[in-house]
Length: 373
Ligand code: PLP
Image 1: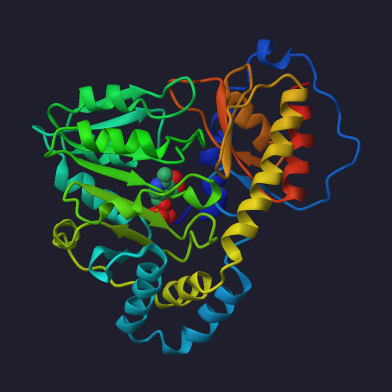
Image 2: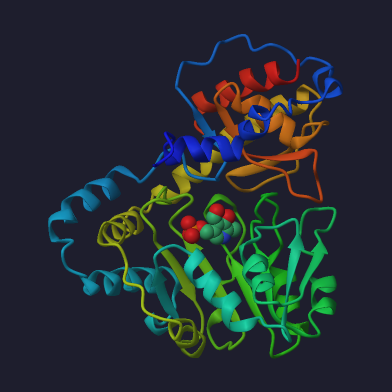
């Protein structure tokens, strides 16, 4: 018999740690005795559960993307492969790359998993930052590949020199820019240095899932003429299409053919329509980037005024030092219907917060103040 719990409420429980508190593992007395933070003067509007846990875009697809996705639904009994060609042409024009160097996938997890599968094994490890998005290391570990974790530098950048040194027997280096969960930037010059100094046979996978939120220069142009670089993009973040599924890999035709060799996976038609409409709107990226940055910086400034340090971020998330067990904090927030992200093992007292709308971040402040009482 199915359990009387929806997928959403299950995710809610799992991500919030309420499953833990349901078992009676409440936050420690010490955690409850921290100094209170200042109360919020203006109460936040009632907006239901606030999802600041998965680095999604709270705005969803742009209005033109929604229209395009709706309008194409009656034709979605067909694969409509020609739409993928159209999307690739738009990206090729934007990035000044040949279309043969661009491949679309249903989300960027797909090519990310393919790269981890192709380039890691028991004899070929993966080098990743610590902390970073774990998907590549998880797939590699599952394949029995050694995972070499290299601490981020104090400024939040990937330590490319240490990563190159750790890559002697590595098949893959994973570099996320801006990094998840920190939102920190690795300068392009460092990535160029890594390309010049890593072992020639090691593939560098640069994940630019969050680059639209930053003012960092992409390295996508560097895939031209290289056999050892894959750059990933996704429509799941700034474009607000996480549930629609559209992602991109840019690499040499040979590398793309290796990725494709793991099997076909046609694209969801509404996602292609929404992606094309999004790419045709030149204002979408700068407008959403500016709005996200404004709300992020206001929230960080508020937290810091309360005495909670945050790491500098150029993304739609940031890490705050909650000065107590991160899981207990997350559970205390979830009890107030504000779902925040998690901690990474290396930093158990820092918690990742996704940037929501202005109203959602007011609710976040309210809940934060109560959680810290
Ligand atoms: N890369 C990074 C850094 C992410 O944070 C995520 C998702 O959160 C992904 C890739 C995968 O995203 P998607 O498969 O939705 O494109």
